Image 1 (cartoon, rainbow, N blue to C red):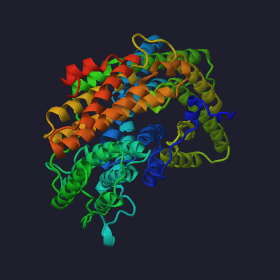
Image 2 (cartoon, helix red, strand yellow):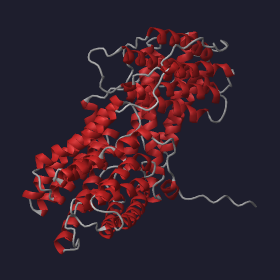
Image 3 (spheres, helix red, strand yellow):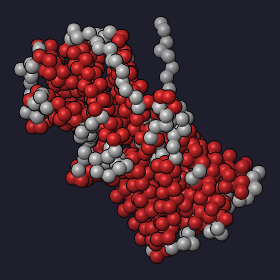
Image 4 (cartoon, rainbow, N blue to C red):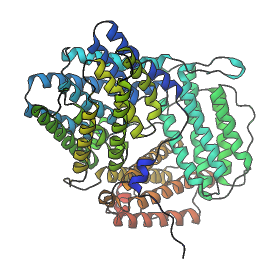
Length: 630
């Protein structure tokens, strides 16, 4: 009898897993030029506290400085910075003019607001995080400057990093023959080229077990390209010729992605040369050169004919360079508000408010008892709780383990460094080094925590506060205990509301896409937009389900069955894509497509019932008018 191989439990395996990828050297350079030089400028000017606040703004902006386009970085860095400045303003005045009880209630309310808003998306989550962290810092640090001045200085620090992001060119950005490209669009070019590479990889994987993973990678590439192109224009009105060309190249990738998905659904290998065309298009995007001749695939099936036609249209779009309207996701204020006030936002807001408010209350109580000793500032405890309570940073137990390990490591390292380096010059150099390491350390929460712990302790020591490394360890462990307790408390309404809300949104998007394909197959532009919405919503749901599955069993059990629902939805969207391509070619569905759709709708209804998500039939009939495919 063979013994099953030993496997770590999901909650522990996730804590040990790190992201992989190339070193983001551009972000490393920006990190080195951000917090350290700002702190040095403040020290040289005799305004050390100003340098500390500006460096803090640059550091928190650096946490959000992820790969992508320059235009997308304006919102990704700018909106959280504005929220952070608002938090610093509110926290500073509240800390000076209110008592402990009123301050705790105010911080609890901010936690409720920021937690609900964080459910909207990544940028909203980063904004909520900075709002809460800086409100705790402003209330507990007692900066010498008035609140409005501290908020302005904080914005200057974050704006300095954003300016570096927009202005610094990417090394080696050259076209064929050595001609330098317009570096402002290097992120957009890379994102669009990655889409064509993902299409080629999916075509290579067609007919193999890896096809599903490559289709998911194509979805991620399309999402990144949409986000890269959807930021504010760098030119007024219709944009520059380079912008219009990039929009055209992205739009041309949509029918290619559709045809490749239909081929993967069919499950039969395709000729090797089918992937050569998308790869040549990817190279043309990266180098800003003509496409040259594109090999046409064999036109023996509907999806292969669609791929051939899409390649021809792509070559024409590359030559013409007119992008037209960008097929992008648009969420109105009503939709965002509905997400924030929905079950996911309510549950998230409740846990953030309770964790943040309880941590602030405990920290102030310890402050009054003199537990903090030589460093009277109590903000570390609630600020730590903010990072720990965020589900988009990973499962709860993984965050707690990583935060505890990272803080202990960072505190130990800083204690040794602080004993060796001169002050303040050596500490400023430590801040600059840690700023450069943040983009690399972002691959694992524990590593990022360790780097930020060293950076913040160095900032505080330059500002005149004792290092107090061991106190920080105690506060972090206390925050871990509070968040673990709050994370396992029952909440009003249904547990795992965020996961269920995202899965419901994915189902609604899938039904809308199916209804459009069946009833309005000729409107391709609308079809591609709905297809993108369906796959994007599905990817968000699958990511949330994956994080929930890696929780401790007491929490993971609340999302049992949701992974099966998501898998069925994925097959439904893939089948809908295959139906769309077949309808374009033949004008009607064949029995194979009809039977597969009927089977998937029935399977989806059964799985939704077992997962406690309601029945699919009612949603389909109400939203799309589709019950069975005849």
